[in-house]
Length: 110
Image (cartoon, rainbow, N blue to C red):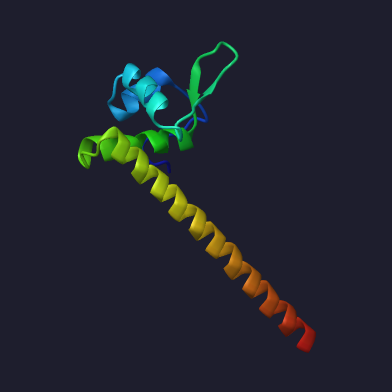
């Protein structure tokens, strides 16, 4: 099962535009305003969006349209979320190291 109807590896800007309900020019503008949004370009120079890119577009759209953030406010909110995710990842690594150390000690006792 896929969420938001995303089933392919790569989507064109027109497909993403239809999927999220925004015009293609809006997506191109968001690329200039949000450093986190950087879809790749194929050999022909056309944008190709991954699932991660589409999730980012949904987050941007939600912040701007539903939460009524300004562009700058949405940019800051996205940056905070990335900081939170980075901290969470670091916490997870530290937890795994503790578990590994505990298991190594337990194995030595056996």
